[in-house]
Image (cartoon, rainbow, N blue to C red; front, side, top):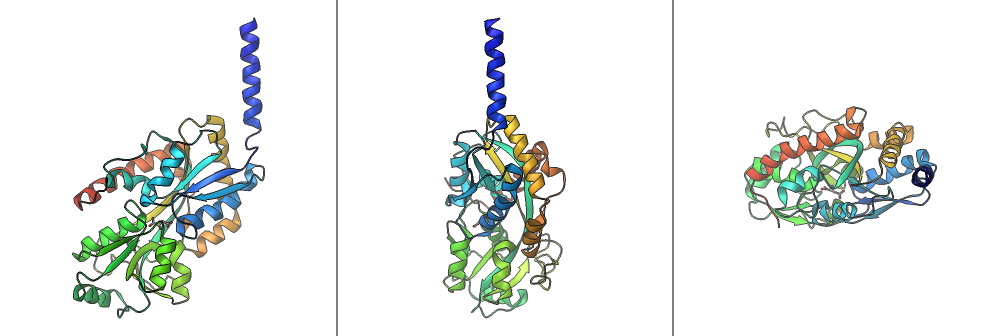
Length: 323
Ligand code: ASP
């Protein structure tokens, strides 16, 4: 009897604790520098996510470095209580192939809460580059072998993956310059310290619109409809056949986060993604909100698993590793 009462009391207490979630600020770790594309997605999402979470305070913490693996590692080791989350991109799937030693296991150290959006990339260059289109860029690249700097956000970053595929397609090795995110990389591209970068439209659209950088192509197989980007050719139609990179973003919690909290976060994410303001912000930057089955936790995980299988051989074939 005593045991039963204790069990009931425990269950009531647990339910009470659950019902109270969230009763303190929630931190979303962004594994890249502030002001960059992943950060933008996270900050916009945080505003929309707060409402269905009883107007909780949602804080963004930027933990950049090592292509996103430092921030992801931090979340994998955080207390699994729903107060530390991770907003990460395709790097969840590319890092395992790029690093010989990973500080976490992508598939077993996280709870998958649902996908957020898909974001195309753009191939951009400093405004002083003599090339103005893909054909001229190809000529310039071939004439400047050994002298070209390509910025990225470190091994495992989306910009690294895209830059890697671009170099392979051009059959030219470039000097890669790693940053803690593409926000600081963009500063150097604007200043002309680096020549080229491949980055999400969420970071490049404004700069392209104001003509502070040159845009050469988009990385999707179809042209984009975003006004500032609609005239850009695809890399595929520019002769790099089959080039197709889209950067997806997803939300994660440390392994062991209570199921009820996970479900609450998944529901909040679904509500947030229907928010008109959020959709307008995403749309203006070329991002497409996820509405398909990848909003289901199990399908989100399955999708990442498929992406690991897809990118692993491509990266291995390129012989790119870090310890
Ligand atoms: N766009 C970056 C990347 O290359 C990440 C970032 O700074 O958000 O992965």
